[in-house]
Image (cartoon, rainbow, N blue to C red; front, side, top):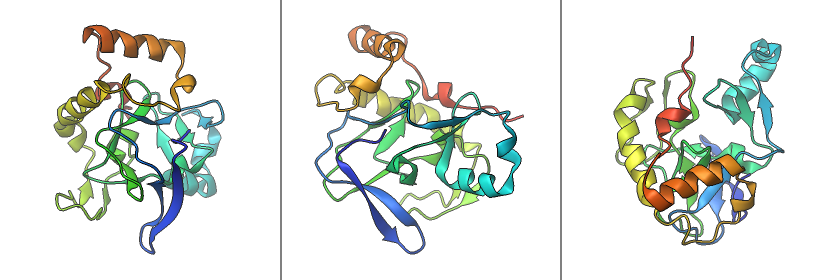
Length: 196
């Protein structure tokens, strides 16, 4: 489920739709969490080899660490890529705001954290745009992403969390352990699916 203070708007004709904040969302806010309404298509399902479905899944689904395709039931599926995103997918199974997000600002993530299946050329518009999603960049960027997430997790218990109730008990326990002790951080490396 995507944060409730968001809406879908047209970014432009080239990009299509995107998700935008309707209210201020402070750093440390959980912006997306997998919930029971999301569709999970297991990695070994025949549907993944059907071109009609595959085209849709390549555009709107993300891949979890087990290789399952996840299709968000709400407008979370319209979150776009940025090389300088304002949210990041975490090893805890949710996305977190890594900096303050202001009303009218587009919610973005880095698609490498969503297990992009192939390299793709893109232009996200950021001055530091990588111009290409290279699957090898995951290892180069994971330490940077972990540092940004750790910084944001310092605020997780200090800001309003409308999606908090959707976190499962294991996630809450792991998150509280890290928050209380600084131990057992769940790295973004835990999100990586190794394609065979």
